[in-house]
Image (cartoon, rainbow, N blue to C red; front, side, top):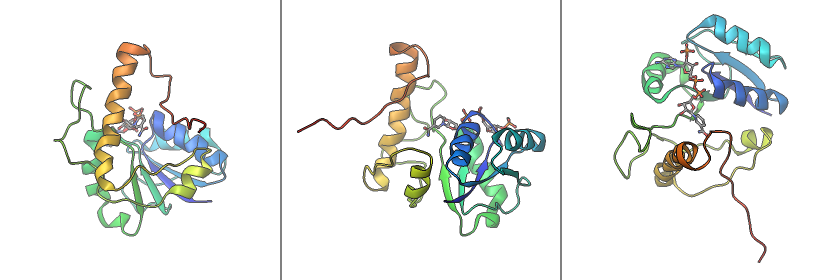
Length: 168
Ligand SMILES: NC(=O)c1ccc[n+]([C@@H]2O[C@H](COP(=O)([O-])OP(=O)(O)OC[C@H]3O[C@@H](n4cnc5c(N)ncnc54)[C@H](OP(=O)(O)O)[C@@H]3O)[C@@H](O)[C@H]2O)c1
């Protein structure tokens, strides 16, 4: 099991935090609004704790669950406090109209590929590797496809894209 810290107190922090505590991981919540962080930690239960914003996270894996625009300033604020940590940035780098990415082709907001396979399995999910760091750009594009489906095909965000292996 893993020690994780989640920076953020929104919907994704709640969802990942719930699965992480259910999977037996140690969870710390950090938010710029300390009372929101405390409320979320209490709601999660499972021994979840609250960390102080901007100080060294307790977790070895740090999940950054913030809106895209906030990620770089917040990481810069934490600075050396994140030294040695595995950083998992889950933000979708959408443009302002949510029909493309906020950066040019062939680049990605991902800067490092870390092994978080065991932690993902502890969330009850199946990690699949799509290849090297260059593939992060196309994974981010899958987020744009998801928003398009939500707006035009499905009609809401209550769905997931999945991989189904066909019998050969
Ligand atoms: N990878 C995936 O599969 C996936 C799926 C869904 C969403 N996401 C991404 O996950 C991220 C979080 O989504 P969410 O649904 O949890 O959003 P949310 O409910 O709106 O929560 C956003 C969180 O970010 C904080 N925040 C926003 N701007 C900030 C800033 N400038 N500085 C510090 N904190 C800031 C908010 O703090 P306050 O409450 O204090 O405002 C809140 O804790 C988004 O980037 C979204 O695109 C990824």
